[in-house]
Each structure stands twice: as structure tokens, then as C-alpha cells.
Length: 625
Image (cartoon, rainbow, N blue to C red):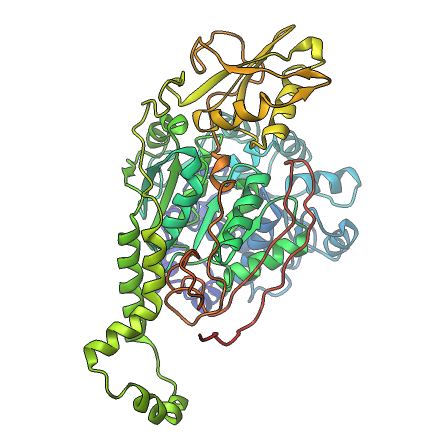
């Protein structure tokens, strides 16, 4: 018997559940559905991403809606348009046998007039992003003054994104006697404030412990120098031939840059960030769901609402600014009871965040060394052997077997196996023979001899430019970032005095910074920079921009490029080029089609991208030498 029958759901919902193949409710569904069906109550449900929260509130919501009443009876608020559309689609699937129930998605980036028209036709359920919903309320395009249920999904993320004022304004426009259902992965103070201000004695449901990470996700970290961050990412991809991953960066600029570098190196990758149009975002997500893209590089905001099955790895290329955000990232994998891996690539200056995250998610990280070239070669070779063993043989090959047997007939079985695998393996091993091993530095130890490196891995500089040169801390930071081509968080602790200034960067940037700045002039005056003798970052001077010693490791993908094989392939290693200085990439992780989803690079985070996307190309025959 389907266990959903024990929760009190009606026959129409059970029929839809059967069509969807659901058999066993998740823990949050077991706890929430009976309570919401049996009582008219407020509820706070804390459960990790990927635990089935949409069904937990969706099934009882649908059962409580009167489909014959065409007025708006329920409002669901979600943080992003992707999640808004996902929830709308799921509610429609759940209610497929409920005649007359109409659900409308309301979100930015699409015609507000068309959305208002759909609502006016009769939408019992509205799923909306806070910004667009508040806009529609201000224009009198929607009436939520008589709703019976208001649901806040991913409440912590909505508040992290700055929607507090919109949410409170929207809730103030709803009746006091409604029921409010709040679903969240974590319970920060802002969420508690919402619960206290707008909810009446809510029942609390907690799956696991508060803020605890999913038990189906293992957590690993790799400690590297900032300049090795990108090479480490490539090795982690190569050691996992079947990787299907989301890679998180903090900024739109870094997201775009990492995605472009991966594409240049032959990986099927794409960027997902806020500067893309809705059509571009839809195209990227369609290709990702179809596994034409297998390394999706995303910002935290853009990744909200990604609900894709079987993501094997979440890779934190950079840790988030808010430690709690890590839980949302890792929740992209290990869904529906399947196992997943969350990987953190961390520098010395970020190392202390690992223990902070461990306290939040109540789970220990495993420290692992970056894979060696030989370990990667072994993993790729075994993967190729498994693929050969399991491949389905097309009957058409029989036509060509006589010619093949004539060419290879004098080889023994052992010789044939060696030669067949060497076609792909030789190129791969030649590449890694020429690559240096990526060493993992020890936390809080100085790696730059003679340089004043602080305990957080940063260096503090003295600069002979200051307020008399018309700089304040913000304009000086922008000037230095542009001049030195540093990422948003590569430069910090900027302190501007009348005739001079101080600033910090990761120690790995020192040589380049001194070389560039000491060879330039500013408005006719020779620029002079030197390392402060007071030590890297230990100065007690006020930090005007309030940033700590973080490094995004932007230099990781700005150094020498290692071009990948870009030829098409049917498995094993990429391409057919034999040049030993080209980088073979591993496995069949990119399927039989190559996607080159590439958008214009942003020079600054607040500048729009060029919005140019390469087309997703179809199957092409593999080239032969």
C-alpha cells in the first residue's frame, strides 16, 4: 500500500501521487501533511533543501482550496523566478485531477500585464517572487486581502537576498486570520522575526537538528594556494569521470570567468548568473537538465530553484560570504535519498571558515589532498574499461568487422587491449607527466619566504597615494582592482590617509602587485608600493570597507592556460589531437554532445554581460587521425 494514503490525502491527490511514482513520504512530509490537513494553524518547518518541502505544503494546500471559488485563496512566496516556476509546475502536477484549480506564476523578467491577465482569469493559487508581487500590489493588479493561506518557501534565502521589506509589506496586505506556513532550511534571526511578527503560536517541525546538513551528503575540503584554485578544480573534475556538478562562485564576474575558462579547456560548462536574460537562463537550464552541460558554474542567487536529479557533486570554488549559505549549496546534491558530495576548495585565508561551517551543519569535513596525475590517469583508465565492458553493440558494426579483423587479426588479446587503451591513455598520461603536483599548504603557515604574511595568509602594503590624490577607500579599492585585475574580494582592509594608504591582498599576489604599481605613474607622479613592515593585516588601523582577510583566489584562472582537447569523442578521453602540450580531459562526463554555452565576460560585477550565447550543437562524428 502507498504510504501516502496514511496521511489523510484525498483520492484525487493520491491518484496524482501514483502517476508521479511517489511511494514513501519524506520525514518533513510525514510530519507536516497530517498536521496541516487536520488543523487550521500556522507552522514553521525547518528542513534541508531536497527533502520534499514543496510536496509537504503543496498536497495539503491543494486539498484545502475550493476549486469552484475563482478568487485567490493562497499565496506562495519564493526567492527566485526559477524556484517560482518550479513550484508552480509541481503544484500543477499535484492538482492535475482537481478540476478548476488554476495556479499562476508571478515573477520578474516577464510581462507583468500578461501575468495580471492570468490572475484575473481566476487564480486560486499565486506563486510569486516578493519583488514582482509587491509591484503588482502597488499597481492594484492583484487582490490578496482575502487569502486563507500564505506560504513562505525558502524563507531564509528570501531574507538573505534582501526581501525583508517586501515580505513584510506583502504580509501586511493579507488578512490577520489567515494561516501562515513558513518553510526554511535554516532559522536565522530575520526568519524568527517574521515568525514572531506575523504568526500566531506556530507549530514547529524540525527534520534533523536545526541548520543541520543532509545526512546523504559527504563533505570534503581541499586546501590550496590561491593561484592553484582553478587547476585544482580541473583535477577534481578529472578524478570523477562521471561528474555532474554545480560549481559555486561568489560573484557574477568570477562565475563568468570560471565558466569561460572551463569551456576553453574543453569542458562542457556554462555560467548561470543574474546578468543573463530569462531566455538565456532557460536555455542553460534546459541544457543542464539534459546533461549537455555537466559543469554549471553559478552564483548563489541564480542557483536557487535548481531542482535537477542526480547531481553528483557540489563544488564550492569559493566559499559564500554567509556561512549559513553553505547549507543551501550542499543541498543541491544528495537529494531524494541518493548520496552526493560537497567539495570545498579553500585557501589558507579562508580555512577558518571550515570549522564555522562544521558547527552550523553539525558535520565534520574530511581533508583530502589534490589528486596526483597518476591517480587521475588510473581513475580515467578504469572508467574507460568499464564503459567498454558495458557498451551496447550496434548490429551495423557487423558490416565492418571483416576489414577490422583483417587489420588487427595478427594481434593477441593482450596486445589488442594495450593498444586500444593506449590510443586514449598515452595522451592523458603525457599531459600529467608535465604538470607539477599541486601541494596543499598547511593552514596558518607562511609560504612566502621573507614576506610579512599574516596568520590569515594576507600581506599588507604601503602605497604613496591618498586623500590628497582625490581617493577615498572606495575609489582607491576600485582603482587598484582595475589596475591589478583583481577579483571583488581579492583586495581588502583598505585604509586611506592624507598622503598615503594601506591595503591587503593574499600573499600570492605580492610579486605582481609590486611589479605593476612600481612601474606606473598616477597623474604625473611616480607610484610607490612596498610591503608594510607592520606585518600582513595585523595593523590596528580602521578597515573602512569592513572586509576581513578573504581571497577569492582570482589569480587561479588568470595564469597560463592549458588548452583542452576539443574534438568530439564517443567516450574515454577528449579529442583526437596528439600534441602532448594539450590537456586531455577525462571520462565521458560530457556525454556524446558538446555544449559550448558561453556568454560575454563581465569586467565588473555591476556591468551587464554581452548576453551572447553559443548554440548547443548536435552530435558530430568523432574525428580520426
